[in-house]
Length: 397
View 1: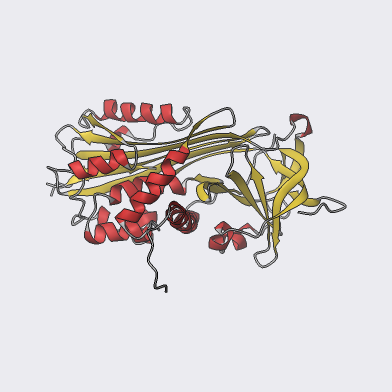
View 2 (view 1 turned 120 degrees about the horizontal axis):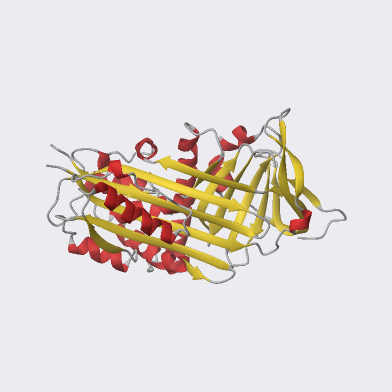
């Protein structure tokens, strides 16, 4: 009998040990590659506004990779753009994850992991050690045969970790006595802008859903100094809006043309790459927006070459000491973002379910950056993309 799992949801002759900076750089580079790959796959089925967390998905899949072997392991590492070996993966996450723990007035930031284990399943001691020591993940036994109670229990934990912004991550119908494990990552952020937008300056402005179709939406505005770059090759302006917390910012990518979003999205890898931003005085107008999304990752991961873990011959023997015939049956993520005058609140949760198989210089005038048309955004912390998405359309105020 096979068991099921659910995952809910970087030439020289002298040798030297990799430094923390090297490990984090490798994580950041892979994270941007994965963010771009996932964005392109989501576009194949999602035409509306989007919010997703490449990092939340990477964390739970990196944890899964610690219990995978052979092609099952290698496909995860390559498809999710993780560092090249388990040693490098674990060093990178061990160094980065503690940075995602802040509970101050400036920044509330949390990344939490949990392993829910079926009643008759024993975790492999080496996997449990990695889960605890690297991913700061606790394990808890759950009776998945009582699917409604089990789902409510997992969902309650997710809600508590995301300030109640992510609800009903796990559907009770996805759990059964055939479920062996559920791996969950919850990511939450609430941050204040370094330079807040004054509420009195927010007023209705036109937002072009197309070149001819407009809607009036609440739009924030301010003139201040920001990191800015006009990329003529890509046909887009880049603006970095920093939060008060050091190293945390939102980047807005605004196409030159009112219907230029699709052309931009064909170059999403370049959009997520670091730009030569320069400090400039900028007249900024940005609509308030709130988005929530649910993304099923199985087909996305298969398109990225991660296939073995979903098949009957998946090799995930390193997860359980007594249940060796495991495969991944579901990978799902819910995400939320709310952008207002004071700052941003964002959250995501990714789950993996395993099942049994039966069988600048100041210019005279400020530069103009008016976000009055569809755009792309992403939030980075220490050069790692935590959240990303787009705004295609907005509703009138």
